[in-house]
Image (spheres, rainbow, N blue to C red):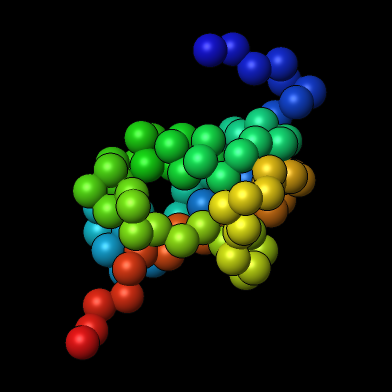
Length: 90
């Protein structure tokens, strides 16, 4: 799949807890389309960073605000996407 360069932006991904362990890093940069659905974003991140095992429990947050799964996400250069796994505990 090729994306036109003017329609992609470079964003920083931040991984926490279990997602950090599975991805093997606490942060990374990725090129993403400027606009995509929550599920598209989730699929790209889980497939790129070996997070399929926790995919159904991950929360995604853009610039410290949890993303709404029902709304397309608009991403700008230098945005941060946090990958927040399920919180452990009883």
